[in-house]
Image (cartoon, rainbow, N blue to C red):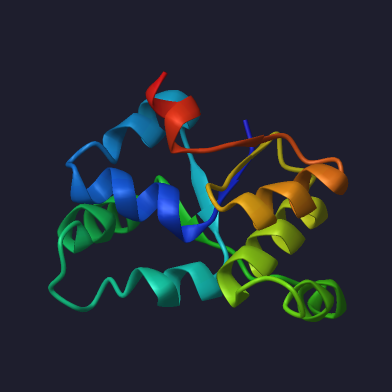
Length: 123
């Protein structure tokens, strides 16, 4: 199953020590570079260690967005992480996109993506 995530589902699950739920439910998670930057994994913040472990173990991977024009267009209304995550999901024809923010979800769904967020993951 191909899954792309935005920042908040990863960060929020890591903070409450439940990041492993993503691995259990989806296997591998792909994130664009902007999401990696937003996660600030090199800083000592709540959840950072769990995210570093997920990356080093290989089930969370960074993927370059190749459709930069689409990402730039999406950045006009969304933050950089959301824009790149949506663009990557479209490029890769992801089975799921993990996204919590209302505006980002609205855009992703309008582009035909299947979206779930932290509540869907927990349920």
